[in-house]
Length: 179
Image 1 (cartoon, one colour):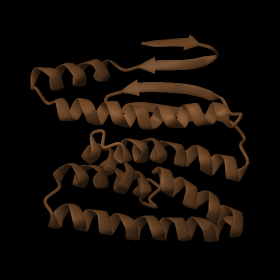
Image 2 (cartoon, helix red, strand yellow):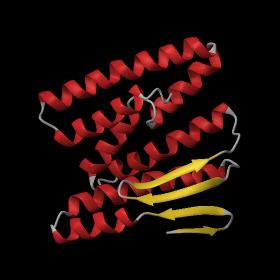
Image 3 (cartoon, helix red, strand yellow):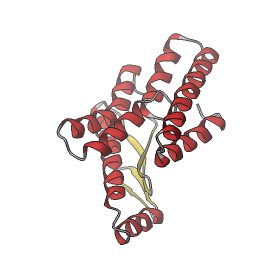
Image 4 (cartoon, helix red, strand yellow):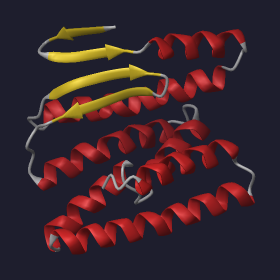
């Protein structure tokens, strides 16, 4: 389902409702909480984007939560604040002990310097500011691979299947060359 509201395109996926219904039928409320707090993480990005003078182009609601696309031309410092705002939302929930384990997991995952995660995007911006395009691309790719290897190693060592799935998705993203 697609619609436009306040000059922003919204897209709501059927999979969103299917996943919610499946989780409710299976009494898997932890998944609902993960979806909720990952959506609040994205809401932090959306609010900060507008506070920093930007504008959302498209907001997608899907099985993974909320996704945001924007083409705002923010200065690097504001772009970094925008990128860190989602992590800060999760940090607030951790500090107030609200579903601490879920928010800590979202915070830690997004704090990895792996593109396209929040800290990966911040790292890319900083590298592009100080190095030419080829060097920053190489450094970002190398840093992402090292961080991803550590993440995969941790997920295998401690038998964290969901973290392994996230790692596989990030590896796929990197192998496609989407930096």
